[in-house]
Length: 320
Image 1 (cartoon, rainbow, N blue to C red):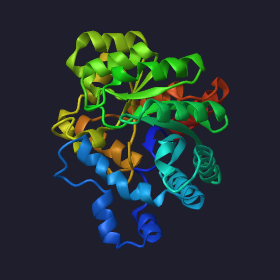
Image 2: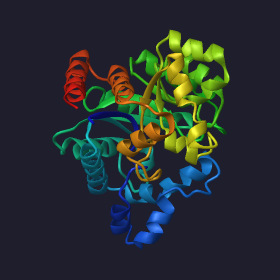
Image 3: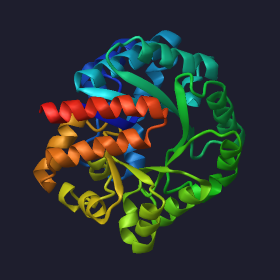
């Protein structure tokens, strides 16, 4: 089935073989330190799995290679459009500029034909104001030239969404679209803060299940959730797959999209995610088609591009 992915992190989707080769480390050691284990207790634990990939992502060539490999992996999973996100500041440890980082990733993604890709640049919770402001500046510089939006990622539990209001006021003034990680490790109030900033898409957002008023607000304002079920189970946001609120939110009328979050860290693909959702919640082919249409409609691309993707999804749906 042709699919659309709106929420996938580049540094969380690096092939372990590639990290092993670049850093000259034993592959089993790399896998142990890049793929989440069942005893992971929370998001903070989950985020430690990004350390090795980030070390491998400090040169132009490595960034280009890793971006290219992700585009190939997504294409092989029948993904026809993806918005790949990453925090450019994390790849400047050895002297690369933010421009170097962004252009290298774009080069890698665009070198793969047969899949359409764009980039979302992440500001990081815990980084100082000036660092995050630089990400806004580079986002503006390449906006609609491969970069389509801004994001805020990181440890939501310890760095509250409400504390980043000024940065999103700047982004809004510069007419930069944005999505915000919210309602994942923190509660529904984080989602309300993100919406108050002007976010039309929310990364995760599943903790709105705690409050009917917030659910109604999300529905009324046609806010789209970028839901990543397996990741939510692994970070203990939900106790088990069966406890995930995705079906309840979907049945209430929330606009849902399905995403992997991190292919490598979560050891998941979009196809596998669909299989799990079908197994646990009996979602149908029609449901998955709707999820993908939601993703296209919420994507940060032009109306013409959306129409092309919707037609491609429709043809594939009717054929199968």
